[in-house]
Image 1 (cartoon, rainbow, N blue to C red):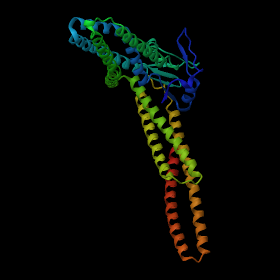
Image 2 (cartoon, one colour):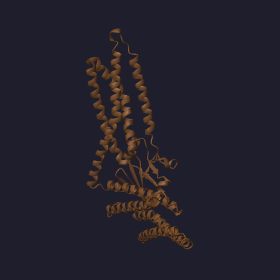
Image 3 (tube, rainbow, N blue to C red):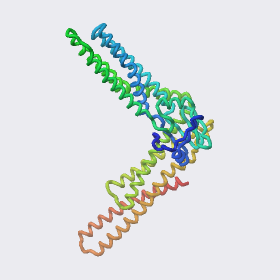
Image 4 (cartoon, one colour):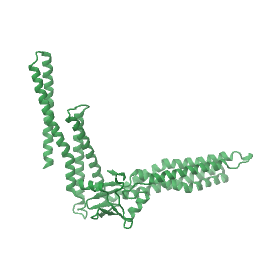
Amino acid sequence: MKTRTRDFDGEIKKSESSGEILIPEKILDEVNEKGFYVYEWINEKEVKTSIELSFLKAIAIFGPIGVAFTVFSFFAAGLFGAALSIVFLSLLVLLYTIILSISRTIKASKINHLVITNKYFSINRKIGKIEDNHFIYLDKESEKIGKKFGENLFFESKLLQEKDSAMKNIKVMLSKGFNFINEFPSSSGKSDIRIYLYLIYWSFVLVMGLIYFLGIFSAIIVGIFLNFLIKRYLILKGNLVLSINEHFKDLEKFSTNLKQEKDSLEKNLKEASKNEWKDGLLLKINSGIEEVNKNAEKSMKENKELVDLMKNSKYDEIFDYNLYNSWIKKQIIIPIKGIIDLLKTNVILIELEIENNKDTEKNTNDEKLKGHIKVANTRLLIKKEQIEKQLKTMQGYLLKLEM
């Protein structure tokens, strides 16, 4: 799955007046190659960063008020009053964090993936048409949510810079609070007030820190779970666009795995073509063949389910199924042809080695050497039979794919 916008620097054009965004050339190339592209606009890490940023901004505003309230409680009711106020404020902050996390997670789920085909795009549970000049037009809600996460479509995210700035601001505030207590006037009869203030201040900071590091993480888990339940419910209720997007996401995952396995297999085949059968290379090649086949089957199955889902619906024309099927076959056919060529070459090499061994056997009187040669030739014949069996299987599989 394609994530982030680093690949598209300098390619993106956006009309500020109409809100139209030009699809980057690299995305269009992949759409033309396999029929679709899934762009991950907002990922889980950015959701977490967004929540952390909002939390830090809220603490920057309400933190000093909370500390002042806790100190007032201390002077009014002693340490017990201060402890109660910290507990009360912590519960309020935790509740805010949970609500914020659930809200952000659900909003992010609406635009986290943008599906692009040759004629249509889908986001925020809606499907829109791509104009002839390859511009897409986002609805107002999607644009608004994107800005909430500090990232326009296909552009760099600004969340990390904003979070770093907010964190520096919090550190400055902590330092100011420490200096304020340090300069707090104390009389000889109340020399321990400053110690109590330090205790209250750092207790408040510690609790807020725990909520930041642990509470946000826990709240995000709750938000993701609730969002999952909502999504499942909508799919069960027949939300067709949501179902289509989920299938496209799975299709992208299996397609990416298929391409990676194919590239890895081709690398192993190149090594084997040099007759470098080392480090269990034959085992890696066999395993690679299995993985390519497995991911190809998953991709084709997912594609069939997508076809069945969209057939006879108003979205039937949004995806070129035949183009994708052709792409899948290429991912399988190319390495299989390489395997067949390799196996043929190895059969020839084994036959040559057997003939050379026979010549050596004829020209020697060393009975011990003759015995070793016979054993070696027997092993080579077994290896040749195994390779020929694999070769026959691969040739049959290739024939089916090319039909």
